[in-house]
Length: 140
Image 1 (cartoon, one colour):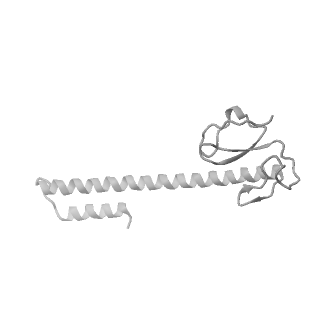
Image 2 (cartoon, rainbow, N blue to C red):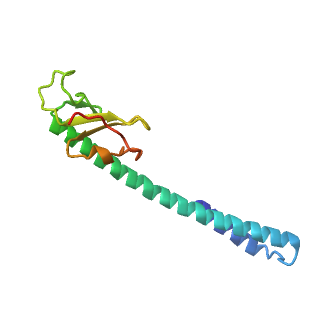
Image 3 (cartoon, one colour):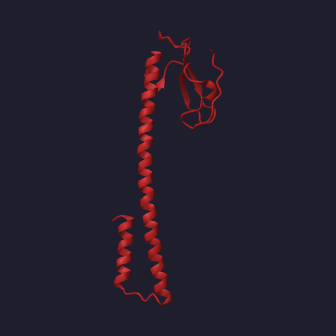
């Protein structure tokens, strides 16, 4: 049974007992059951919102994977485990690719490695993972 079903069951039990709400014990039990019912409704709403957010995060993660794949295809790099083997300047790798316009920056706030090209305005560049503004000393 879910928490909402359990709260409804408790409410039904209390109604079956015909508690005298004029007495302090009856008032207390009635209020406790109301609180349990309200908490169950709040928890159910939070669980639904949590699932919605999890679904949204999963979609964003898939979209980010597509962007990373696109950037690696543009660079011509061979990628393994979602990490680009090429550092963007091709002096440290044996790959025959044109990476002159691809830049890679590590976010100082969250440590995420971000790749971008010259079409991105580096003055307004923010980390897609944490939203922190990143300054870049890219060779233009």
